[in-house]
Length: 572
Image (tube, rainbow, N blue to C red; front, side, top):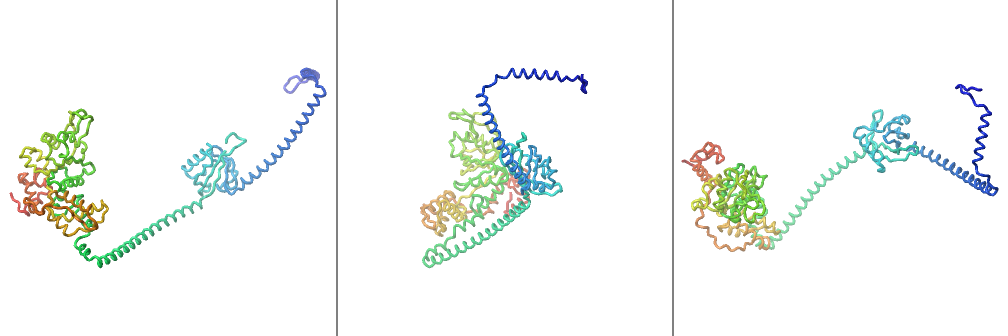
């Protein structure tokens, strides 16, 4: 028996022969019976046709293979010798292929590029993060993506690259791949920056030149307008001598309006001694939190003075709440001032915040305080003293920080004697009294006020009134103005509406031009200051220094107060 190299016996050739013949007999027995001649010829024909089809398919496959090889050769040549740097990247940004231009662009041999991660050539972390996001968008199938990055070669040189990437199919791999092109845009970027800088300089130059031309044009237009006005004035001088004479008697309203701004104290117009003293008093008390009592006739501008005090105080950024005690029914004043709870009285269907709560941190202006009912004066006194009150229908005590400015056109001392006003409330309110003089005691301000109101209402109505006749101003100066500044403003507004042409025409028929008998001569600023110092000294028992002294109330240094007393001859 034959033995193989693994010490296994080899089968004899006879045995193998027998086994082969047995398998052939079994295969022959399993085959179908032989075909007849016609069937055999048909099968032979089909085989021949099938053979011809296979040969034709082989010819087509060989032709397609040749075309594919030609196209691949052209593609390889285009890829290798393209003027742009092309790279084939995998999903992780690893370089699988690169053309000659790409290798030259990155400054490394082509063979050494394969397998390197492209992001290693990117300059900054921010740029690498941008490239990762760029690659992710391409792999998500969002189409062609572009980005700009700064790249660095192995020798340390840098260049500004423009990248454009798209997804490509890879037939031999299951990973869809990325085709990326890179252009060295460094020179173009430098040119763009220079162009942008030059454009900015050009725009700046154009803007400066435009401003110069605009200014020159404005001067030219002004000169032309002045020439036109001069020409028109000459024509009027020859044709309307009477009109020119009338114009010479009055001043131009616009010029007077400019002048009036020198004396404009907020919305209060005036430059007389009487009003200058009011302004002085306002400036004294405005920075303080002292309670102020404004006294004066109706229409003298007490509300404007209150607004001026608030606007010059530390509370100017908080609201000033105004309460007109004459405009509210007596049964609603308490609700309006202190608020109410729902159901506090019939008709109180909702909770309401009072004016003192609204004014918290700011100022409350109690106009016509003399009209306040006696039963509410006690509650107001408590607010002034402690800053506390309760809403109607609520036991809860509220606390507020409010500065109080009160005003009255009544003689409150007479109201006290008549039992209509509380004396303790009066002294609480009159910590710093300011008396606003009536218009008949500040006639120096009438012309200024007239021109101010003419300018105000010509602007409002769109009219062009630039002349106030001298006779009209004299008419205003002779009238006693029982309604004060408010009456004057109403007269001017009506005159502006009814005037035809550039001259103010006043059609009001004043009943009398005599001044009332009770009118006193206008006091000088010095006389008013002397009277006020005497009044404060009497209130403090002639004490000058200390926390209850007159100097503190007047806002003066004690030595300054003594000097003023010597100046005015004030003695106890």
